Length: 406
Image (tube, rainbow, N blue to C red; front, side, top):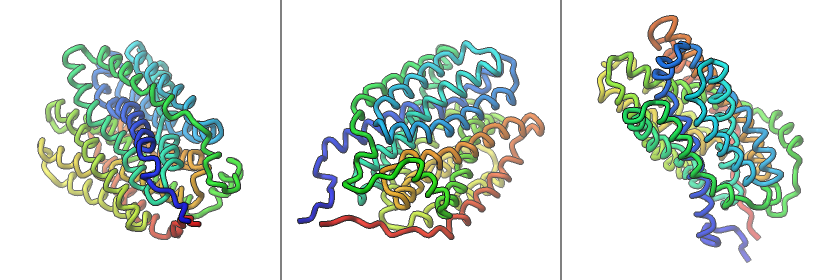
């Protein structure tokens, strides 16, 4: 008898899991990815300088990554419910108290530690692993695409909401309202409470988290994958933090900054779901190379084009297609390499490299702008890194996915 799992076996329960994971990612990612809109008013209010505020954002990128391997390891052993509950609460608290902070250290604490750390706990390492362990292997690609699209949908909705709240209530109240909105994700923590991920291995012999990490760090393909994801983090953090500033430096109205972030999120929904489908049809390493090459071409054309409103929105759309579309094939390769049992821990480490790049992208963006009055150097670095990432994925030895039948 064929015992291969089917998406239709537990259809309502599976879609409840997908809605819960995607909805959580929508709220936590949406809140984080709109923070760049607050950079300028925060600078005006505190007088700390773009560089110092960018340091808080950059620390948040790093801390978001640092929390994910540990959150993943706890979720692998104890289940995801408690991890998500604490993570969602910290995002809400950190976002709510940020307007009360008037020093760089205070912003690092609220944005960089509380909000970013909470978002890491309720972030892609845990959420992608939850979807991966609950979904049959042949459907994992589209499942991770749906979860990833949830984060993009949150950005698409929350960016224009944030700018509307800022116009009507001031940036302080707007940020606190966003913090309260994040609490809407709390029910998902209860819905996703269940048996630990390491127990959901279909009879396979369990491997300890330590042994799994040790084995992964000796795998050249895993290391190359992590190196490529470092580049992705650099791109994503620079754009999410500084794209509104880039657009303002072109002399365009602030609304274009908000809509550019919204367009990034909207088109990343398309890119994420499309990539989730594509990973079931083409080699994931080739898809990743294509995504990074597309970024390099798009940035080059943007630098050469006149900086008009339509141009920046088209650029945001193209970058949105590739923005976090790297996540489904990256998560898929981790699952292919090592299976789902320690997925949260191992993908959490890859996410850490992503956020090391994110730290540099957010921080260097502010420092370069303060020194040069423009972001040109960052764009050149972006192009160079994108070309390197496109090339580094090519030597990865991608295993064939083995589906179990009986």
